[in-house]
Amino acid sequence: MSFEVTINNDVRHFEKKVRLKDLTNGNYNYIGALVNGRVRELDYDLHYTSNVKFLTTSDSIASGIYERGIRYLFVMAVKRIYPELSFRLSYSISRSIYAHEIDDKKLTQQMVKKIEQEMRNIVEKDYIFERIIISNEEAEKLYQETRRVDKIEILKYRPEKTVHIYKCDGYLNYMYGKTVPSTGYLKDFKLIYYPPGILIQYPRSEFNGKIPPFKDEPIFSDTLGGADAWSNLVNLSTIAEINKLAVEYEGTNIINICENRHNRMLVELGQKIYDNIGSIRLICIAGPSSSGKTTFSDRLTLELISRGINPIRISLDDYYKDREDVPLDEFGEPDFESLDALDVDLFNENLVDLLSGEEVGMPRFDFQLKKRVYDKRIKIEKGQPIIIEGIHALNEALTPLIPKSIKYKIYISPQAQINLDNENPISLTDIRLIRRIVRDSKYRNSSAEDTLSMWPSVRRGEFKWIYQTQEEADYVFDSFLNYELCVLKKYAYPLINKIDKDGPFGPDAERLLKLLKYFVDLDEKYIPCNSILKEFIGGSCYRDAGF
Image (cartoon, rainbow, N blue to C red):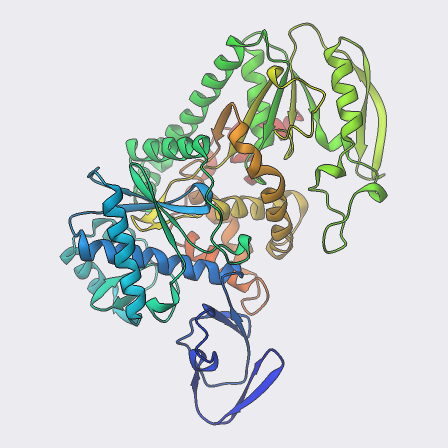
């Protein structure tokens, strides 16, 4: 058995199988590898001609593997020194994981220090992660013995017949994906006492494989906490709970519960604006890609109209510079995410004139001509606010001539706080990515590969322009609908399943398909036409009616 392995253009010849780990020269910075485009653990045995790329935490794939290992390490350490504690893990502020005690047992700074020290002790021992394949029946028995009801419930929706359990120095757990070969790879992490829980920081690919500097984000934290509290209150905090309600009464209850929450939030927001309409002249709406900004803006407009407030809306898209004047990104491509892609001077001039009561000739960007045209004039009445919506809307650099005191800033994004089980949260970013794949296919005739090819650029723009402004929001709207992945699955799964598994987007496809497979299907026939979800799957009364 003779085969070749190519690593960074270095071709090696082997006569018998070889482990990936044995090709790293003991470099613990390597977390995983791509073998002919497929994600592999370092314990994987090569026995065929392969092209290998080793991955560090500067790669998003490896960052995910590392994060999974850190969650395992944290839970393992807790079970060793505080077996009476049970934590629920979720994604949180400062790109970290938040661990809160399920039974509200009080934590102290000293306890957090002991947990971190135990984690470091386990890392120093460099215990092996041993993968054990057991049947679903054996897994259920194991979970019953360890009183892991949360893992038993999600097991019911697993299509496979076996489970890959990881064993580490006698401790057993399942983290729904690949991990590092041993605990010695997990040296880089920090625990921060963040009452009533713990923040766990780890290396992120967005920060070149480093731990992000801690940044307290109280508004974001409160929003996530509110989303988590609501999901727990209505028993929709796990996939198993969502699936259970989704199959009852054709899903009408879960749809109505989630949509009623959005309705209530809109009423609350409308009342806040109504109570302060004397000072609010500009309503600014921003959020990352596929947050539902367009439908939200439509619904907020009608909410305000129902209160006797008649806003006008101005699209930032109409202030794009001509194509040749748009700045280039680091790859030499037009950077339409940049604030400098907009004619900020003209935008401010128009706003000042409108707020002064003047009639203004407004631009409209013609995307076919790729330039602005002028074919309408508007004038606003006294007490008539202006709504602007776009990724830069909360950025003070967009509206420097408008006093901050007359702006009302709204940040919108899905703030999902749902889990596979207590130790395995679902990524907020992946929810938006799935939304966008479905929408791009329906309205732009784009393949899933097309969407994924643009996603890194979109994400860079979000980190550069959006996330830094969310703490300035006067109101945060959680656009997540707990039932939505049960609906999106029908559209997204076949699109993602078409992706070449050996191609550059194979790892993304694998990750998204693993998530979607756990959700039951839910028919959208009972979803109201004004739902934010309709913006992605079609059938929106706003889009179809040309609102």
